[in-house]
Length: 356
Image 1: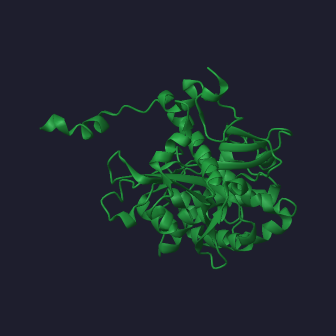
Image 2: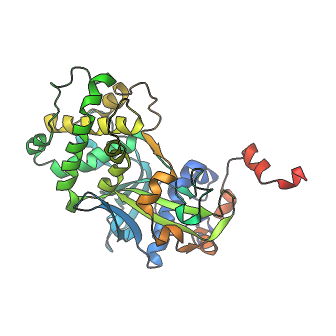
């Protein structure tokens, strides 16, 4: 097989995945490698990604960002795409091992890490919005605890040279709460935690940084058929992303229990507070001990009806990349190496002739 005929993905020439091998096309691998290639393809087409940021009024605002800026590369960088790797510049902020993130961009010549991005490839519409009018379609986001660790790191990185001044943000200290593992001890302080996180956000508006890349793939309602305009990329800044769980508390007049979003607020607050005191935080201990009787398999999930107001745009209504362009992203037979899940309910749903 000649080099030019090897299966591959647009723009990814150097990576820790061998796209000539079937194991590099599994579901978990494809969900991060295809979005990376899609973002590179969009840059090549001259398109900017939709960048969901926070403005001075602490309101979500759409800007745009080229993939090159998202990945923090320039013309001189010879880029290496390290999937499911550790963004080592953040290691110094944590006690223990830093978790992996979906994509780390490295300079191939120096080995330096340039950026770390969490990737969420999402369907449009999701189950909560598929019965609504098309303009109200939204995508579900499921967030891992590791993403919250990287969120915390992206914030403390801005205060690394002055952690003592960072401590001034925190009204709630270790002395105010005897036992952080008990929900009843935490609930009275949740609103104050949100105010602290808002205050930090307000001072970092000009320094917010990309955290989550969320490509969307659009279908005709709940069907498995792609729309003609079916692909696009949204990017959440660290501060824009925070609104997905902070807004839950802002809307609640009285907090009576700790759900996943509120738990995420506690995790983030505790991580930032520990850094302000010690210059590091123990994310393993925080996530493990502050569970509040809920599993730690995910930080939180938000359905399409919640994400839609944040993402609402011409691009969400009509993605810019056509389904006919997918063959320019997945190259030289790469699609033949895919291993999609075989789900019985999907087969039944897509076999109407069984019920004739």
